[in-house]
Length: 256
Image (cartoon, rainbow, N blue to C red):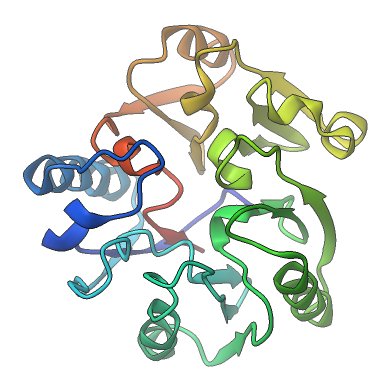
């Protein structure tokens, strides 16, 4: 199943993260980022996953977010093609790093696509969102690679006011997707999945991370916690500093 994991890849925070991309034009504090990342790793370690830590990349301020330049599907790693010029160079570095974990490595050569726009459903199905970071050519080329590996793919439009497709949605159970009110308007999601819709104002809680029998959610969203704790075993993680640069729980790791 999509949320059953044994291994995880993270990247140690870089001091240059204070210059990371932010739609809010906020500069995070490195010390606070480091504290949040350390807490993130402690939580994941307690869940029994093997943690693999990559070296920090000071030349790439957003490089802590390893989910964007790479995608793992079964025993294959697909190197993606981030669209922003400050991130595009990450792909060549992570391609070399992934060789220690995967024998089969493919690459998206045309168009732009980031992992934050790729939602894996029930292991063998993927939804790719067209966004400011992922264009149609990139989505179509990633789709071809995934289909060649046996997966099915649906390409959707991410709402204009949402940065990444997964910024405001996450797969949390069999055919169940947690969504913000923005993402709840996507017809494909409404027609094919059971949606748990969060209240307006709690959009940040839609980016959760299901790991085995636990659901990791960000601190500070009381209504989301109340809704989800009725069915799921919740672990709350602080992501206040990370959220200043438009990131959440899923962005900081690759899992398989």
